[in-house]
Length: 303
Image 1 (cartoon, one colour):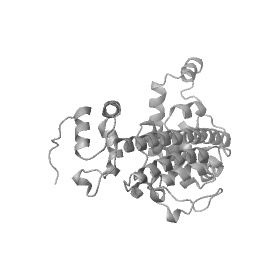
Image 2 (cartoon, one colour):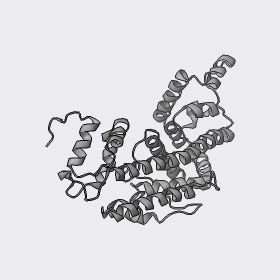
Image 3 (cartoon, helix red, strand yellow):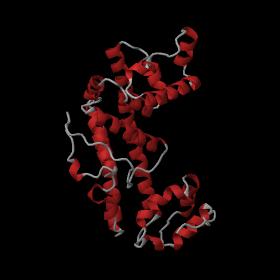
Image 4 (tube, one colour):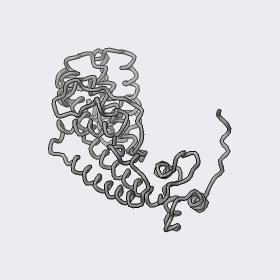
């Protein structure tokens, strides 16, 4: 049953006292206090949580659990986010270019994003056009300012519009294209069916935002289930044994899309280097008998 929120504010020093009273080992209290002051207890609490004994509602830490264990996982998660963001950037840039240029080439219309006749659903088109109008109005990009000064057209060419609208809006425009052949042609460049491409771009847009806002990616269930490809151009996983709500599935999506964008990418190697660090952390935890198979076993950290 819901009840009023009655927790009080704790300073970093008070949190140190609280964590120690619950059995968490803290060697360098002054340094831990600095981390709590600059990172925040709430953000770090997600990394303290797996260290709790069962039942977790008792708020007692496992024997040998330490503040350093939580910081190790916090740093791992931060490095993982940076790797993911670096690769998602390549996918997003490619999607912007391939969709904007692909439709322009096929239709000969350099402002196709603003042409209602090219879209199947007028309500969805109007919603997308409203976003375009808003972004154009508030944009201070040099190329937009130059276009306003140099030309009388209401809308700039799509390669400019594609640079200022959210990826989500661009995905909606692509999904709403009236021409099935055009949607299929663009999706083929990524080695996917067009419905799958829309689903994957939507999911990766959400993951990109998580990384940009420094949200935790490790050891969490993600809300959106993606559309599973029935046929693939490149190597793909056995999706029947993979949980689509876990990060591992997203990582596989990124790697698949990179095959059509940057075939010689180092994504796998960078992940393996990071996971080697993870294995080192795991061995350190095992040596203290913290019992962390729930956290690390069976790809749980990334799947």
